[in-house]
Image (tube, rainbow, N blue to C red; front, side, top):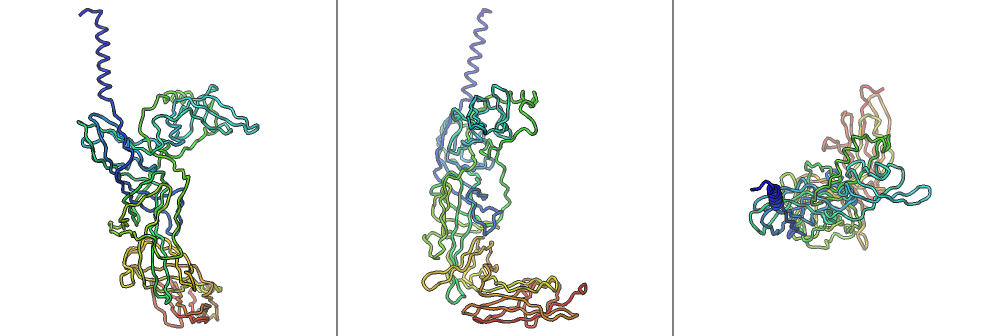
Length: 532
């Protein structure tokens, strides 16, 4: 071979190798627009109290979402884009199964269109920096190049030099000429797979997502005899996610689990937080830092995107029916044991709507045996503490969670609305909260103090041994009421004038207060050795 032909041969071989390499790494993008079937399991916010209402702008529960999809996979390497996943997806929790030859890579930084991801994916690109003067209101605009991502201080390069966004003291905003092609308004997760031959696979995608919560809402209708109540409860699901899950197999889990929500970064759709350079101007940025910024301008590779700061544009709130215990649906959640947790399964598919709430009947228990008790607690830590001005006495609904009393099933935490039948319609007696209650546990729901049943403690004569008191209980109702006084007697100085019993470390005096009447109970608190 002639020497002059060698460069041509080398050029041909280089081109051939480049073509082979590009063919080897060529990827086909396969889009899966929506799941064929989906199941949603909602877990409660572990830090929200039973009586705290949903904060629909910031739900801190989460959901386990399992999707089944039919995906047509080509031979060779392909990027599969799962569109329509939850916007609050936690990428590191995603599990993908069903690929015949497995997956090569799971994309953990899929981008959803948001202020943070729009800025992050515009790294190294020209944008328009718009400023407004405080004094005149005049708007000026100049071209700038984004030098850093959305995490922390955002540095721009303009014709005047380098500066940090929103650190000039003027209102500033960035205007983009367009949206990068790799950003999507639909939450998307992608994986990279390699298959030996074309195949249609049934793929399961499971992941955790934030922005969900649930609670129970109880309605108790007190019978005229005051000893029974019809108990009904709603299971209320809430979502602030932008994705709806139609016809989902839905369930809720009660109980506390060890879960810590990972912090989402701006590149994962987290918040856009802008920091200024502390005590410095942009001209003070070290040259080494500027050199590092210039090295960061290389175009970022195209990746599938997901995640976004949640923006609630509308909320469909369905409030509990507080005027009737009759459910508006015959669907009732089915209870199952799940280790130390309790699972409430909705037996028919329902839609978990974006930015909305849904209520399903949780339980219906007629004629639960209850006792309505007015209860006053007195702390006798020292002998003076018993004296008390007249005040209303809290009302308690008391029962036991067992079949003999009409219950005998796990009761998840939630709110309780108590009604009694009035002359022509139900009357709301009060609202309260209840913690989780297991089978065989006592259930005691405390309502607000009643102005009709009042208790007063008066101090009587004192002696070297102690001081006498009388507890005066008045009942302005037109029927007798059950009353209990609980004495916390840690120092064992309580000396009652009538028989009492003990319960949960308390000394209890119980009595029936007659209609429009009063009852007096006398007791003595002994003087301690350190009291004069």
